[in-house]
Amino acid sequence: MLEHVRIHPLCGACSYAFIPGDEVISLIKRLDNKIEATYPASKYLDSLYCHQSNPHRMFCRLPDCIRCASAKQAVTVHKDCLELFERAHISSDTLSCLWTMATWRSPWHDAPILHLAPSSTTEIKEYIRRAAEEWKLPGLESLPMELDLLIYEQLPQSCLRRYISLWTVARWWIFEYNRKLLTISINEIEKWHRGTRPTIHMQAETNEHNGDKSFIRLSVDSQGLRSIERLKPGSANNGLLESNPALYIVEAAECFSTASIEYMFPFARLQLTGGLEENFRIWDTPSPPDWKDCVIDYKYTRTKSYLSTLNARTCNGITFFTCCNMIWAIHAHTSAQPSAQSTFKTLNPKQQAVAQWVYVPISSGDFITAFGWSYTDNQARFFLRLKLAGEVVVGSTSNITAENIQLIKQPSILIYERPDSQKITFVGGVAEPTISFEIPAFMPFNYRRTPFISANYSSAPLFNVCRTHIYHEAGTKTCRGILVEYLDGSKRALGHCRVGIDQTEVCIEPGQLCYAPTISANPRSGLRQQSVQVVISKENAHEHDGPDWICCAMKGVLGFWFNHNDTQIEVY
Image 1 (cartoon, one colour):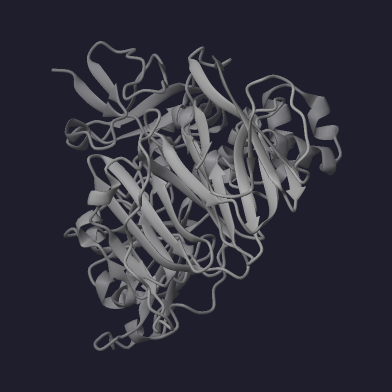
Image 2: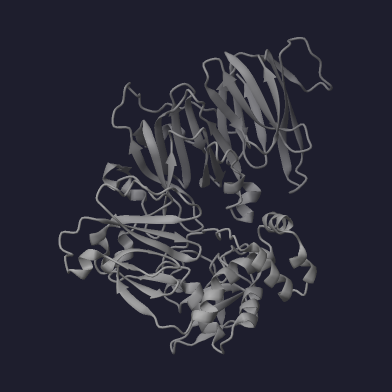
């Protein structure tokens, strides 16, 4: 039987995500604690299994593989990262040092994969100099700092960036690897931040642990455990601004009663016993909501994932990335992050090729009065009711009237899980303490039969419209989506509205909507493609080139069906 080797999605040396075609090597810890490198390198493929370079091993990417879970512990690195590390290392035990560095990027043994991007560095000039030496490019280090920064920012997945990320951490391990490892009970620590020595908790010095009602907040970034703080009761939600990319664990101090840290300057790692990690909730915010105040659907909660929050009161829109009737990513639009492109880039290449952008705008005078979700027949559906814009559905509309919807009324925060390489699942949220008006139950959603497979549906009434925005596919007249604004200040989006990315055509006080369906071959896939051209004009008198145009006054309802390949609209 083939030995399974877990192939991780992130490089243990540089912490960048692998992309298809990368040459990767696994480091495996044998029973005698020696580290073995799996030569020759394998090709990282966009599938559940990598290229099998070894006839005795199965290089597996299945996140929940039982055989990988019981196999020898392994980390995965880029082939060229390993070569860079070997050239820089001064010890003969290079693999053991790289293994330790890679495993300490995880905050504790067997922690969930957190997909944290490497932090930006202020020492770019120094690393450019080292890169110039490695690649024999003396002219590179003579460039002004402005050009160095430009090169760094324009090459997000380049060897240069990976080298910088690798060396940022490796420089400590190369020279400090043989230092003594210290183990300290977390109950003894008042605070610690990477690069400093732990400050001892005053109660620990006087043995006054009993009755400690404080909280402990841990922060984690791409280099592993970043900080430990002891907080007074009631202060867990105060005093720390979000610092991306980082994740946080905030729990009562008693939850860490048996935990300790392994400390080797400047790094530390949690040491957990007795399944303690199963009680931890990993958040994307340093000030998570109090769990007892959350409305939670426990049948959808899973271990070994982390929780993301969406502030329903501060965002001006939400983009759901759907694929195969499931939600794979969510972006909250804010003044700081107006475009969802950064979230789109977190999807793997296969998902990016077929992802549908479902945009729900939230105008300044509008807000979400209810949010619901349902999972049936391997289909995820989310339902939003806005005070002004009305009801919106995200996901498949098939058999929608038979739903059993989990509902939160007037949510201020929505909570969802983001497990490794799997679909997103909403698990609950925080409702406003008071509701000033009655919120009727959802349903019925009366949608027509979908015209093609995995179609998303959106609709918008065509009366009282003050402005429209048509989103065009790049370089064509094909309509990808339409954003409709109304006299009462509400907004509704139809189709793919890629805010801040696609070109738009705006019409103020529209009086006529015209559309022309077309059938052609998709230039990328060669598949038969249904698409549509749309023209919205202020004047009723107009002309079109060609006989296939359908002209409608601004009344009735515009229905919009779409998936990654096809688009179809109808006014009824």
